[in-house]
Amino acid sequence: MTDLSNVTPTEMMTIAAARALSNDDVCFVGIGAPSAACNVARLTHAPGITLIYESGTIGTAPDVLPLSIGDGELCETAVTTVSVPEMFRYWLQGGRISVGFLGAAQLDRFGNINTTVIGDYRHPKVRLPGGGGAPEIATSCRQVFITMKQATRGMVEKIDFYTSFGHGEGGDHRKRLGIDTEGPTLLITDLALWKPDPDTKEFTVVSMHPGVTRERVQETCGWKVRFAERVEETPPPSKQELTALRELQARTERAHGKKGN
Amino acid sequence: MARFQSLSEAVADNLNDGDTVAFEGFTHLIPHAAAHEAIRQGRKDLTLIRMTPDIIYDQLIGMGLARKVVFSYAGNPGVGLLRRMRDAIENNWPRALETEEHSHAAMANAYEAGAAGLPCAIFRGYRGAGLKDVNPAIKSVTCPFTGEELAAVPAHRPDVAFIHAQKANRRGDVLIEGIVGVQKEVVLAAKRAVVTVEEIVDDFEGLHPNLCVLPHWTVTSIVEVPGGAHPSYAHGYYPRDNSAYLEWDKISADRDVFTRWMKENVLDSTPDVFAARVKGL
Image 1 (cartoon, rainbow over the protein chains, first blue to last red):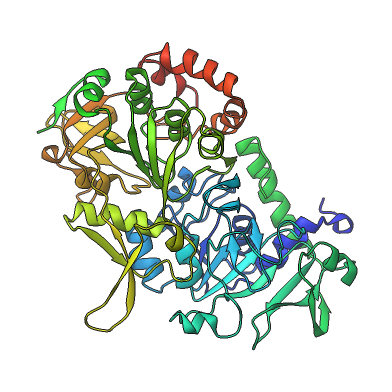
Image 2 (image 1 turned 180 degrees about the horizontal axis):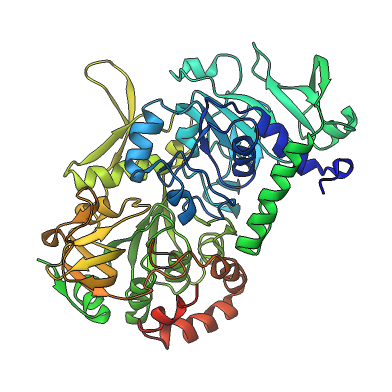
């Protein structure tokens, strides 16, 4: 049975991320942690949410988490499946997506994301997979949620490459580039919820998960952390939320022989 | 007019050294058998285009067939990094590899522009993104009506496209269903197109009129290769072999293991093995 006393930080992160989505959202889902969160939302408080994967599957409802963005089940359970050019032109560029949900290899305090290279672009120390759909997801969705586990090598003072644009240098940088969408409005980590400061756009801790200290948030983050004047405590997972997540992961594990995020 | 050929004939007739070639499939219908035939025939100095170079591009690059790769996401989907491609970029093994990197939106638009016979694709993209500082093929145009600055990239016009599909009929019309990706666009954008199919049927009678069909006169060559997408999948025929993608991470991690695996499973093999690989999936 669901044991509420041994919730892992990753489970807390996924559930906190799921809570940020609403029944009316049309959500462009990245693979990995975002995919788990979006499907937990669909299986709990937001059964009407529209989940879209960049493979062209619109309104999908997979029983297990896909290993790739193009798994067959996404198509079989979708309301419709469109071509990839149509996906990016009519649906994403056309402004029909309310939330883009992204992960990050490197993130800075203004929500700029790097998933391209560690080190110099021409002579990288590590060549990462690259942006895929993210550069346009970050600017075409009405808002962007980011989810990642906290670590000093991931949450850095300066990212090595601007794969996708968040708030740039902060302030009104998006507006100056003619980008009229909101950009990153929420960062969900395994320790806390962060929201951009209304003026500077710097991510600020607004809620810490149960048992997490300010010291822990700081020592796993590469920049000097700002805390909101009033920092809430994130409500712990409910039995329903935790059961939905664990059952989803158990089904996924049985299907792929590998644990989903 | 589509010709029905063996895979070795189709590759020999359509893929030349130095060609720009796209083996497409967005997770689904990836033409693995065709890529393996290209490796067996030892083509050289290819420019590879693909939105999501995964295992087959890791193999083509690791076997030294590629001079350049044009791409938007170079990962083993759901598993991790592409280790052979990384080794080529980071260490020039087995040869140096030039890269031209885009976003998915740019690649999809570039295929569509190629299919539409346009010189370039125009879209709202790359705003604030670092790729436009490192890729000289990303430029911008100003909308003559609104003044909005939009991104522009050259159309993809590959010399040859390879895709896998579910069915062809006796005339050579090709049917694709499920996740269609950019299969239609890449065929229409390319000068020549080779399509491997799960099966050849008499006709498409009784099927839904809006299914994705490429008329026979848009396709150069058709080859029946059951299982030819494995370990990718063919909707309605067999599922994705996720364990093979996980396994690839280990095979590709080491140059010697990779080289041995390629000899056993590709160089010393034939297209006929694919049918057995999807049995029981």
